[in-house]
Length: 297
Image 1 (spheres, rainbow, N blue to C red):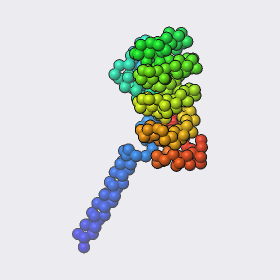
Image 2: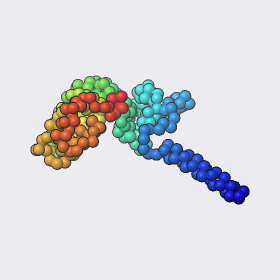
Image 3: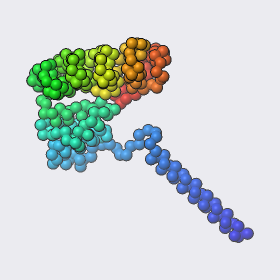
Image 4: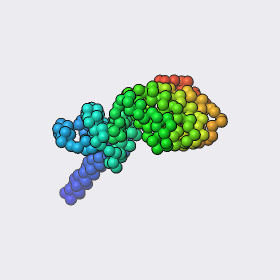
């Protein structure tokens, strides 16, 4: 009897131990899962130590550290970038590491991180944020050789986004969206996307619908839907025209697919590639759907 009782106790302990181990593992598995809401690793605050040592670092290292922290949404990182970026101008370069950080930041879901990337790029390109710089760049942007023209268009778009004569920047860039050179049109569309003002939306829609190059149409769609510096609220204003595009049988199948992708990116809705369903959803939820980006929070 004693042996059976002891066996029962051991079995119970083993069972309890197994249950405890299983519960512990399930908790660990849940914490490590790729599914669910973001799980903070820390308070995401730029540490006092990091701030103290910044002045001892070279501008290149400062830019790398702070842009990486901005990408990871560390509080204080963008403030430090704003305070230091003018001193970086002409002293940093987009080497492999900083360029990788720049591209990651430029594709962030947070427009403030994208803005930090633009500030770093302007500093690396040694551009003074002034009307005089736009004066210097305008001739190349309007009629320069392909390489200098593309660079000038990009530079003017970035400067305009950071508040340097944005209306003038739009006029200069818009002069190139119908250029016969597809590479010039490409950089004009990219520059409009990163200029990010209200007046860029209608031209981007026009290019998306009418440009003869699939590559250019696709870049215009991306600029309207996801890339660039348009806010979520600005992107929403493109939805009525995109719904018209969804009904437009003159568009080729690839462009119509991009229309639905743009609608999904802007609204966060996963609806079939059916214009009637999208119109029905929009008429019911016009401008009242839930925010889908950090910009709208």
